Length: 186
Image (cartoon, rainbow, N blue to C red):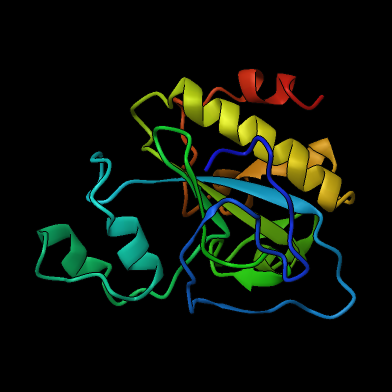
C-alpha cells in the first residue's frame, strides 16, 4: 500500500495499508491533541533491509537466536504507528488515536513524553544509507494525509527522533534529506 488514495477509518486505521497490529501501545492522555510527527529510521539487522524482522520486533515475536544483534533488542517493547519500506509500501502497526511506543524518553518545546501527542513514522533505513525516492514520495503523501486528519500538526512540529531525544538518538540520520521532504508541505 502506498499513501496515495488512503482514507482513515473510524477506528483510526488507514484503509488500504497493510495492517500488523502491535500490542506495544496505550491510551493517549485525554484531551491532548495529536500535534506532532516524529520521523525515525530502522533496519534489522542494522544496515540490512527486508526480512520481516521489524514486524517481529513490533509484535514482540523477534527471535533472539536469529541474529546476534537481536539478542540485545528482543526484550524491547516498542512500536511505531507506521513503517515505510524501501519500496514505499506502508504498514500500520498502531491506530493513530493510540500512543505508539516509538520515542522513549523525549521532550519538545518544554513538553515531556512526546509519545503522548505524536505519530511515529519509521523509514526502513539507517543513518549512513540514502533513503529511496519511493520512500520520500510515500512519506510526503502520508504527511499531507495525516496533517489533513490531524490539523494541529504544523510544519514546525514535524521533527526527527534526534530532535526530541538528542542525547540518545541520531535518526532519521544525516542521509535523510530534510530539505527535499519539507518542500512537500511548506
